[in-house]
Image (cartoon, rainbow over all chains, first blue to last red; front, side, top):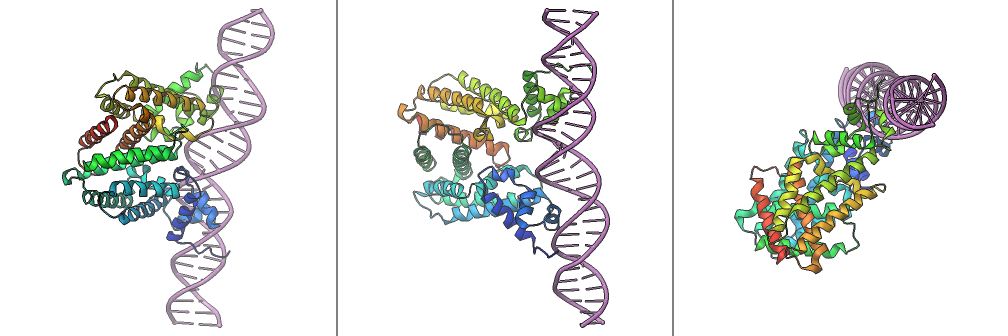
Amino acid sequence: MPRAGLSAGRVVELALDEIDAGDVRAWDALTLAAVAARAGVAVPSLYKHVRGLDALRAAVAVVCIDQLTDTLEQVSPGPGAVRDLAVATRTFAHALPGRYGATQAGWATDPNAVAAHQAAGRTVEVLVTALTASGVPEEHGIDAVRAFRAAVHGFVLLELSGGFGLAEPVDASFDYLVERLSQSLTR
Amino acid sequence: MPRAGLSAGRVVELALDEIDAGDVRAWDALTLAAVAARAGVAVPSLYKHVRGLDALRAAVAVVCIDQLTDTLEQVSPGPGAVRDLAVATRTFAHALPGRYGATQAGWATDPNAVAAHQAAGRTVEVLVTALTASGVPEEHGIDAVRAFRAAVHGFVLLELSGGFGLAEPVDASFDYLVERLSQSLTR
DNA sequence: CACCGTAGGCTAATTCCATTAGCCAGGGGT
DNA sequence: ACCCCTGGCTAATGGAATTAGCCTACGGTG
């Protein structure tokens, strides 16, 4: 039997391919069986590289969170930064819905996902920096980040999971939200 | 073997008990095995009352969505309605996190969940009515509902799933968000 | 170049869940 | 008193995760 040449990193890559091939729900639907199939390997073989499904999830989440953070970090500070950050987030979610799902989902309460928590912490730092550099009062930094994440994440989630049943244009609604959010936060 | 005296409705009730016993994730973790255990019955017996797990989920979701809608319907219109609606939603989510999860989760894209969609439609109607009766310009009714749901749902979700890692008081952040949301929508 | 030990595959077995098929009896209606 | 349907059951199938234990490819060493 020729070796497949796997490695911990390669398994994570394959898992990323897998969730990239699906929609937001791909994250929850991620399965070792699917990853093993992509690797051309039997399922138990994966355990030589990864502790199990939860650990793989955590590793994948870290990659996705970092990628989103990097994207947000590119946004230049200034008056329009709130809008730009929101648009960047939504664009990321549209382009890579599976990865977006990974950035926000239930890993948060998983005890063994310390690295994911840290990665998410960096996201918050980047947002705090970007927002305070763009007119959000210092003393409301955390409140503003929470409001920003809640609003944008809530919108994107509802949008991607089909929660907006109506035919009304979604882009306009997003503009509406972001416009008000931007003005509210920068007062 | 004495009969257990089940019925479609009773099974749904037991499923509700089950998700009430857990946190937000209880909705996703809902299992026929758990419901059967509560009923004191073998798993396949449930199929005499329910088509399967998806159908049970849909039925449970309808109950939860209706309950939330009823709660929102109680809020009296007026200047503080946006805040009251937001607080009512969050209170519901805190009191019954499992049910709250049911009101928002992935049933939205499930094809056989027509009833759940309709129930969600009523929620939107109630919100549109409440918001427009409380100072939100008619022409932005849908936009405002979407913004409201996105912000509140996003906040509650992040809160319940542990997304707010920091020790900063969450209640204050919610006030911050709702205050701004209220002013933005009614301006 | 042969050898050898380990890392990286594999199969087998266990457990848990959903679902389907088909059996059997409780008990209400005639 | 009888019948039959409804609502239980057991058995079997199939997908997933995980663990145990085997076996070999292959890189480093004598």
